[in-house]
Image 1: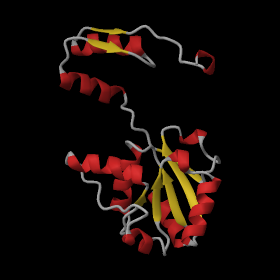
Image 2: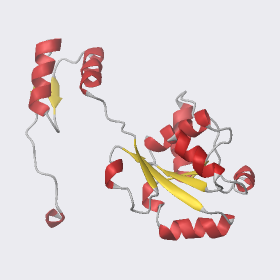
Image 3: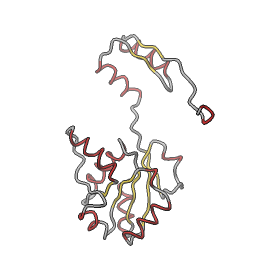
Image 4: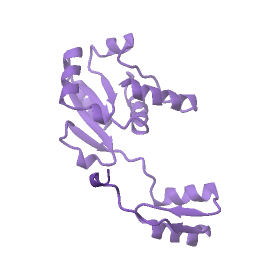
Length: 184
């Protein structure tokens, strides 16, 4: 992702990185500050979540919201913006292009990246915040619960693994079908 972003900036594009307001956007903020010398310009809602991270001792590095004078100065050159994916559409891109007199490219960072290519996004990058099997087992071992209830995906298999490997009582919760539009 860093190489792609650097290439776009070198070509003169400003880059919009899309990430969910809580979780992905903070990873993207840290990413930009790790790999680039200029801080990102983040959506105000993302800035609110970033502040919560910082209040809890997690440093993401500097960032600006569009109303900051520093952001307005940064945006005169190719810059990196971080927005919620729901706001990345042709209208938003058009408004930003007009407001900053810049051309934009877009990328979405999500575990579902392969499903979003071409939907208002120039590029997509797989960035999942889900734990894998071994990470989940480590988490359960660290917490030392008296009982574990598993759900979603391979719930029965995971419950068996917890019992067998960690000797902690575990059982899957009954699965229920996801809500459909007809349910509302």
